[in-house]
Length: 207
Ligand code: SF4
Image 1 (cartoon, rainbow, N blue to C red):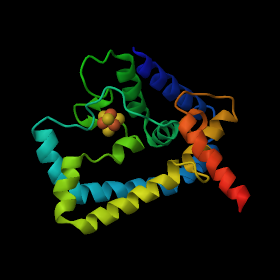
Image 2: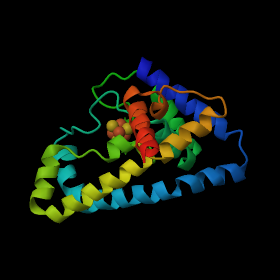
Image 3: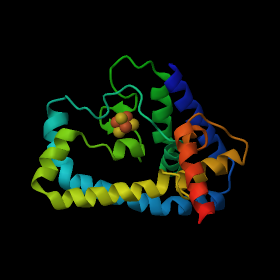
Image 4: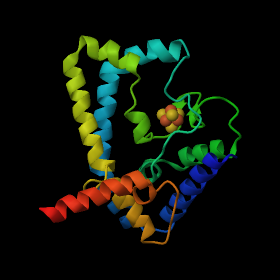
């Protein structure tokens, strides 16, 4: 296992261990907390299916030159792990844990299986990635779809960009308050994101 796999595996294990200790009511409360985000993800999925499925299937999956999923380590936020663990079944979690224990010998994401991504709710960075070629092909013909995409990108920030209270920050705080810590808690340990928070606080106090 490389360092990337270890931090991913440790975080997944930590989150799942915690979920094993909470009551069904608490789990429901957490599910309710992420419900708006899940609706947002449904909206993004529907958009991608409608506008990009053909282009991506033709350009990437058939020709096998996909740029998405071909990097060995992609950014996953702690919130990504929490959301996915909350909605995944035991077998899906086991599948993730298993690939994280397996040496990655290819030049592709460790989570890419035969049938595609092994995450039920894939990391937000992956979900919002559209390669330039696909964007040119689709948005060149449908500029109105580009406007919809920009709106989805604006909505994405409302969950993970900490210039205001956001879900991904709350999820990190929830676990931190219970004594957990993970290098994937970027909203609490990335210098860039901490600066975003600081600037937002300064703006608020100067009003
Ligand atoms: S996590 Fe899933 S969607 Fe993201 S790069 Fe890996 S296989 Fe692709």
